[in-house]
Amino acid sequence: MIKDINPHKPSKSSIRKLTYPGKRAEEIANEFQSAHVHSPPTEVIIHAGTNNIITDSSKECFDNMQLLSSRIKSTFKEARIAISSLITRKDIDVILKTQETNELLKDVCSKEGYTYIENGNIDATCLNGSKLHLNAKGSALLAVHFIKFIRGTSSRSSAGGFPKELRQLGELLLRMIMPQTSKKRTHR
Image (cartoon, rainbow, N blue to C red; front, side, top):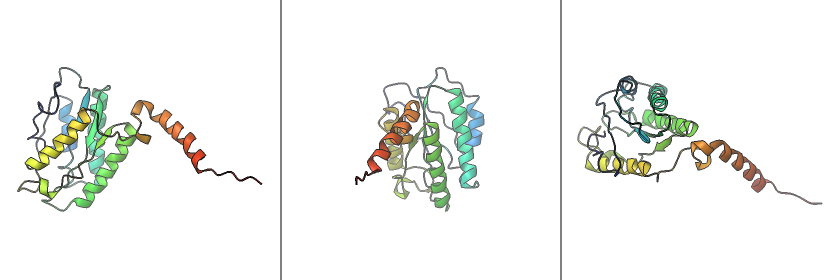
């Protein structure tokens, strides 16, 4: 899916692209442990799972993606992590499983303070003849989504829009503010 994205174009900073063609998320998680990364990244984008969706249930696909994201987080503790949503493939009918898996991924992003990269605008017109891989239009859209995350302009998927570090404080503030706006006092 990301083979046509040039890692030198999205940012002026150094970007390293690790690809695992044809691998499932759990295989990437295992291979990732032996990957040699010279300096810890500040951002990591996880784009995987389309090979899992063929045979796995939504929950199994999600579990394998969660395994991958937790291994990356434990390796790069200071990195901002994004999970890129599964892109609907049209070579087989997995639309419902893809949607269900993406909802689970969105939830884990919110809970873990990751950014969820929504790829819903990448549709059948963005796929090549295989109906699985991206054409030039699809690659361009995916690159734009990645660039927004790298530049910090994509929305964070955490409680109330707060970054992970401020999530608890943000939730407390929201609870303090929300009841005041919904309560109406009656005087007799």
